[in-house]
Amino acid sequence: MNRKEFRDLASPTAAREAIDSLALEGGIERVSLEEARGRVLVARLDAELDVPGFDRATLDGYALRARDTFGADEADPARLELVGEVHAGEEPDVTLKEGQAVEISTGAVMPDGADAMVPVERTDASSGDKEVLVRTSVAPGDNVMFAGADVAAGERALGSGTQITPRDIGLLSALGIDEVPVRAKPRVGIVSTGDELVRPGDDLESERGEIYDVNSYTIAAGVEDAGGEAVLYPHAGDEQDEMEEILRTAADECDLVLSSGSTSASAVDVIYRVIEEQGELLLHGVSVKPGKPMLIGRLDDSAYVGLPGYPVSAMMVFRTFVAPAIREAAGVPEPASATVTGRLARQERYEEGRHRLMPVGLVTDGDGDGEMLVYPVDKGSGATTSLADADGVVEVGPETDYLEAGEPVTVTLFSPDVRPPTLFGVGEDDPTLSRVLDGLERPRYLSVGSRPGLRRLREGVPDVAVAAGPLERDIDAVDLGGWEREWGLVVRPGNPDEIEGLADLIDRDLRFVNRTTDSGLRSSLGAAIADLAEERGTERHDLVDAIDGFDLGLRAHESPARKVIAGDADAGLGLRETADRLDLGFVPVGEQPVRVLANPDRTEKEGVRELEDALEGAVPVQR
Image (cartoon, rainbow, N blue to C red; front, side, top):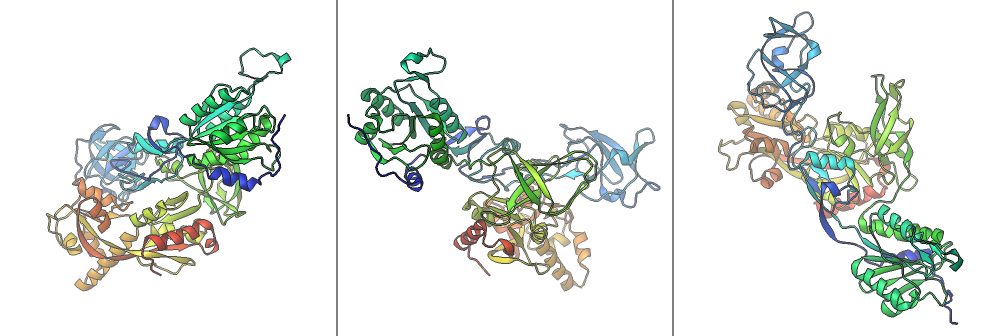
């Protein structure tokens, strides 16, 4: 009887290379949100609307004009006329005037004319509920979540390569997205071979040497866990025609065919001849224990891997060689432990005396054995992105009110396959940056604004910070490069108000929408107004006070433009690129530099090097 001998065993590296040479990708498909959990995005998804889509109260209390409360305190409250009430889910039917207030519920739409609200516990009713006494002063924006404060229209929501989690589905739902483009799961056909195998649940004749089929179900579970779609086929006996028919059917219907058993050198293991005669044999036999009799090849247009028959060997080979290839094809990251220990990147105070579940993100301070850093991710309980940007939770007991920077903490991961991003960046929201990030593998970027981004870089948390506009002071960082962007006023198409520059905002009755003080655009605007004030021989604050809407800023670069589109403003602070993309008019004011600054201790980190290379290839880098 002829037997196939394993004379020259391939190395594990050669086995991996052989599997990597096989095409397992299943293509692209669109799935509904109900089917999206665990799937991998193939394209970046940007927000097409603001979340929330309206300015809303964050507490029960009274909506009012902040200026009507200036100077109010417990001893000398502001007395306001109560002119109505607004509940959640209702459209306000009142416009506030000077000296008026409206009772408002948590989550309700702020009425026109109101720019702040005061919590009910800081007020008292008066004159038979016709007036309210406000015993504190508030500033514009206090206790109000503005439209787009959670997610702003035009902002990068989820990037290509994101494995969609329940948290991400919450974000997509909030954005009104009901269908997403994802990688198709690799279809993996599973064929167990051998005359001795019996399906679980069927009668077993032990006297004939029959055993229950363990591999079909354990391998199918492993395929699903790795991100593939498992397809079980009938048992194939040791007769060549029967085995060939089942294998060819599986090859026609699947991207990868896995068989278990019949890959040893026994003369009855005819599967070797099936692949050699009907397909292409790449490798047979690997110097690994357990799992030596592994077979790798192609059968028609499908990839093929033959696993050993013993369950332990089959699963070890699958886990070591096949599962990573399925994950790669499906875009699913390698699994990690359910908990990790890291060092808190910055101090965290908490004084409410309650048990805390703190959403956190993870970043390494280098490659390989780099230390794990843990940083809090918290935009408030109403912000969807607090969880979308987090990797896990740190539990803090009620007796703890202060965590020191550098303190060791244990993170419970949201899922065992969570990995830190290859690059963690913070700073300015910019469309050019979004395109650069598209070319990187698993970056994470938080659009917190230039000033907070630089502050976090000084604290040593992110790998890079992106800052726009002139830097107010020197910072210990490595300049990876940057670009220029044209900024100015975004106006209605055709510029019907004939706005020519900043002077029109000061001298005319125009409604303006600004960016937040954390934005680099806001800093450049302030500098331009200061120059204009010097030209006119007046003070900067006098010009600022003359601009209707200067003090209320929105967070993302497209937010002011969206206000112009909605008719809520005549002009908004923005970029020419934003105006062009949204078919709006644009009044140029100046050019602004955007710099990408790296933590000097992380310049050798692979993700930072990849970013630097991407910058050189995507934009005309300026140093």
